[in-house]
Image (cartoon, rainbow, N blue to C red; front, side, top):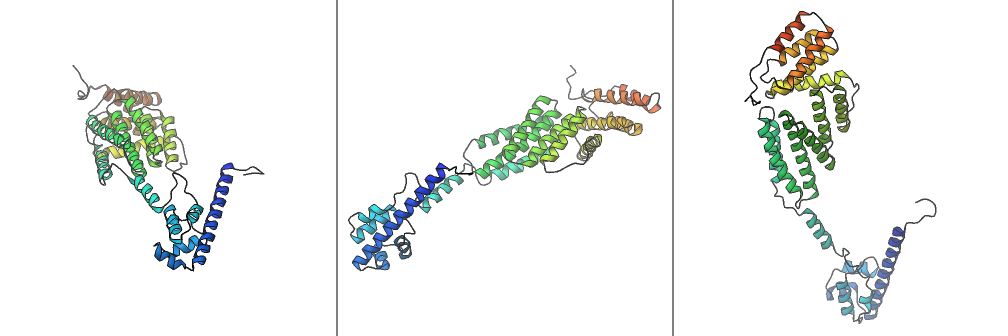
Length: 354
């Protein structure tokens, strides 16, 4: 601390230590006097107690504090009438007096209601659900992930070690991320955003940078699908920053790269045609903004034959059609794309048409 400022806690600790050192020195001096008076060596005394002679040597030199039990026994063997035991420094109530006290505290800290394989089974289950994501039914997968998340949160409220607590937080974070994706795929955007925020919360509590970064990545996907391109880039940059990565450019190219990667993954894995269509339409809009008519129409046409022409896809397709028509009026490709958009599609099996 600066100047003459003093820390009362430090002063108190220093005073207590000085008193302890003096008490041990006084007891050691009295112990040596009694031994000399009776013509007894430390080894003789150790045999009578019995105890370790090396331990007694440290006590006699004032380097170690004897336990109350040992001080009483030394007093008894040397016939000190309680005088020696009275010199033994007292142990404060609640203080850690022995190595066994520390071991017991460590044992309690390691106590847990979790079995040795529980975390491994949970991690395997979460990995399996994430692998199933590209092709599984979104609603069913969301329900499964929700059941596991409820189970994990119950475990978090029980008796677990610090390491287990952090791992459970990480598992809960990945489950929340999965639920955010499945809820968005089923059209429940509000639940998806809540789950996304939960992912960030669990990641922050566990100090897990990758989870926090993924929460921003998922939010960026939401923004991209909804056409909020500046926000998409900002969220992607925030995710990269939390993951410890930097980016050189922040513009439409970043959003386009994100969409291209999403299309590649969905095309390879199969499943989720609505998302695949939305990503293709976004790529078409980005191509239209930079004036690439052929690529814009190519992406738009690829999105239209998909099985789902949902309420999400049709407005985006119309937006793309208007964008290319404004930039390229009278073009044959533009007119043809407009005709494709007007062709009725097969009924959406996910929509109740009754």
